[in-house]
Length: 393
Image 1 (cartoon, rainbow, N blue to C red):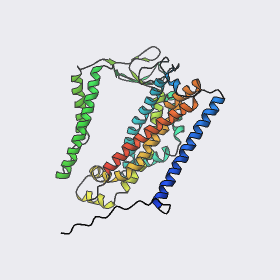
Image 2: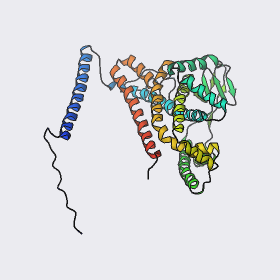
Image 3: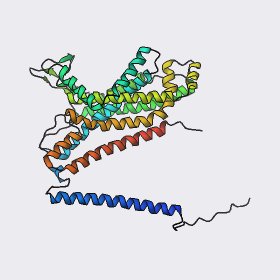
Image 4: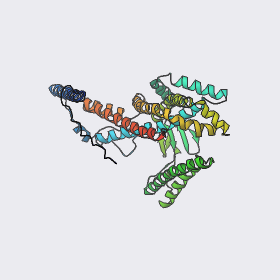
């Protein structure tokens, strides 16, 4: 058998006639221009600030903040430095963003699936919801929910009560655990249960593909998570100390609480974003060829099985990319919470800016926070999109 002739490597053409060489030169010039413009802007800004006697730099982050935050996620008071105040603001932003993404996805998916219901009342409700909430500006909705929470709810002296849960103008107060090492084991058990759910769902999908028998994808996973938490509770020594709220003379005392500002911003962002997610889900389901639905019906699948096992898995390849945009929009729209007094990173930055005069630095921190969260969200969703994509054989 004759050996294949090895071709000599091609020499790179470094002359101006080479398109590849010209491309490298143009890219280098563009990069140099961007760096030069950035350096000029930075040096010009620093020179103007110095001429006006304005201090610059991030050294202020180590100084005492001197202001309190109404809703800190962890121990904080006015004697703590600015960087801890910013950490509280970032935590509040992430709390709204993560919880809002989860709730908006659930509500939006239900609304999108509801658009295909055979019940005309359900279809009409879903359609009306989408048209109402997506056509009203989100800032107006935030203000509306804040006014509803603060005006329609009863005073803190006469809250609505269901068991040990109280709802009033002071917010939602509920029993909360007194944190100890034992509750760390509970969290670890819940995480272990979530890992068990991942393995169970893989097994359930494999069983369905092999036998056509559908396994529970809600109650069994829920039981696994609860079992993991119970095991962690036993391993942690069965901690049972709770903060129970009680109705006081002037307000509800004790327990854990969600402020009216947090409730308003969460409601506004979830209900607004869910309208857009519903349209994304509807478009994704409609993109699946009608023959897939007819084949599912020919196999005897119920309407819910058809949606869960046939339509939604195929629609994911269309749903995920625009869904990523809605997640990014929700995270960035959380910056509007400053309008109703919620202490997110924008609110903390505004207070720090007014006290220190470090406008450039505070704005840079805001930009860095939202850029980092957006890139992290995009990275995760791109990974999930690649994993959910249909593999061609």
